[in-house]
Image (cartoon, rainbow, N blue to C red; front, top):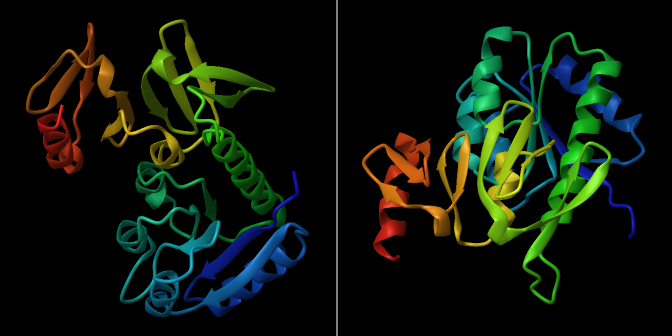
Length: 235
């Protein structure tokens, strides 16, 4: 397989922070910096027609902050947040960001974040179904690639830095984002909560704010409720 550079953009209203991050990306041979922005509105216009692998995104910016930008985008790219305000950390992980860098950002910590991006890109690529539409995928867990059949997956649970795949046989922990699974799993899998994706073939009952998979109770998030209601009308 040909090694692919990680395409990246920087969005930060502080020119000195942009300059620092730019220098860090230049020291990484496999990162390709596409653009840098100090105005988040300009960046939003750029992202309407361009989807990089990674966005290095500041949180506190005028007109449009980083959290708002993530909610608007809903793009197929990874996000590493950069900020001087640690209180945003909880919101950051709720939004499936890969990492959260606290300013002033040191190079060692930046490299750790990039390593997480590489890991998640590798896992994302491994979950895509082969051309012969196989009924399984491979997922990296610890230092092994495990073969998992779609029909054996009951639900996925987000655990901050990890995802737990609950299968008929066992629970598998993997370093992966919920968004990546959501984008690549078959249509029978539906995200019902910020922390849960379920196999709809395994659902036994549904009410207004929870559903059952056998004896397991799964919460339904408010932002997903309407979509789920429409999905079950089609079952």
